[in-house]
Image (cartoon, rainbow over all chains, first blue to last red; front, side, top):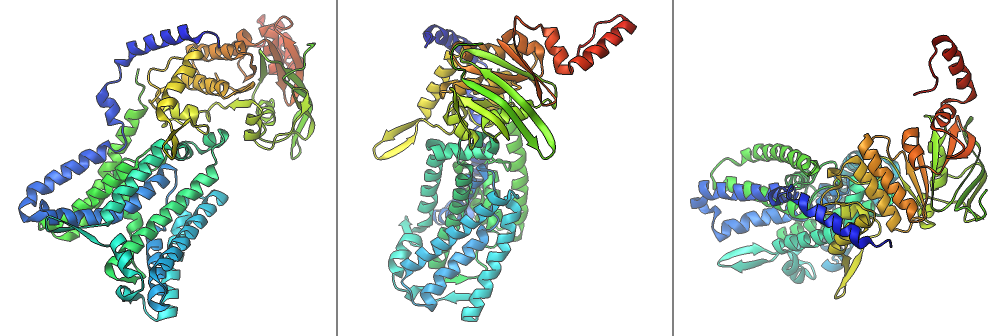
Length: 355
Length: 268
């Protein structure tokens, strides 16, 4: 209005003058996924050296750790969005068990076609996510507690109802279910590359990572996720629909759990009520290794995907290295600790005045 | 006093919390292109009055007029839509988000690529930068997190944002409270900018030294009551301080003390 041109030129000039202070490296360092990227490279290099001869570097070895990474990664990417939005979901492991059992019950026990059964499992998962979200926003209680409760409720319901209906806790025989062929191709087939079978779940993982990154960085919804997680009250004051954002995030997380359940049930041609146990913790670990802050408002989906990649490489790499797999949990806990320390450092760097 | 209709007029605003009389019969006006300072010590009722103004809750009695029309807001969002923007001291910005993402939070610029509508990050960066420059705020890099800005800069960005999104009334809640002298001066400069653009500014503070240089008129609250509104010609810095501190009672006390110790009263 009041000839801003002159002002702007002065501002820009002042800008360039001071821009020297912030180096390109320090800007790169504050990308949330930077630590995970370096970590993934280091861990790959480590196992390439210690387990290179025993098959870690082969296509088969790569396919094996990528499959482990993919299933966790699908969860972790959704959990990353939720955690950036400032919430936790401990119930996803139970959702995996429940959704898988719903799918198996409807198809094996009640002879449904697989597609409507998948639809019902997805709707049930979305309903659980909706309920989690609603409870969190209505009560104002920490989501940690709310979803800890639903973790047990859902797992318990899954076990009790399955045993009530079938008298067992495991169901097999998915292979004979109507519609299995197409579902198998879509969710659990292998793509042969150089004699090694790469799980199609890797494509789901990569696709969802791209989608989640796009949502975070290139949609208003993504901006709202950062805002809600960073400062809920401030976001609300600016008219961000906080309740809608949070409930949507819980629903997406549950839906990711359902997708993992579908992949597992179809891949293994059966369901087990205990499927998905501890996955909630692994997902959170992958997300945190990926640079997302536990306090919300900062993080990335790519980081979570890299966290899952690290998880898969360590889990399979240990086997290739000939180390007893019992040591895996020690590694995992150690990496989590290191990741949290690095994240704190990165966050402080990000907050440092760049003047 | 003024011929034209005031932007905001409050008539006999009263608010109770249980048995506590938080505001009693407060009347004041704000015109466009002026800074109205709302002064008062802790517990004077400033926060309550802001919340009534901002639409957080309605008053129990009295009228709230916008452009001469009575209004009642159901939420801060509702007030914002009518052009009444509130910048809270701590809740203005999200520290870990970039300046441009903060600037456009809740009103993101969009672009169309094929069938997809998406957030236009480049436009947000350039837009935020230009809008801030118009207010005379130079941010080196609008993709840096707000947390890297100083307290004064954050307040300034919040003010610029409210101006950009069409605020007509700007309510500033203690914008200079946690700031040093230089930082406060920076914020006051942007308050002056907002006034120059024709906004009505309600500047809430308990610091007379920040209010006096910028204020056109001063409304002084004490224990939920108003001592009235004064123009700068009508009242001195000293008198405002005295009224804030408790008016007559304190003046009497000060005189007593002066008699005893031969010193002036009323500095806090």
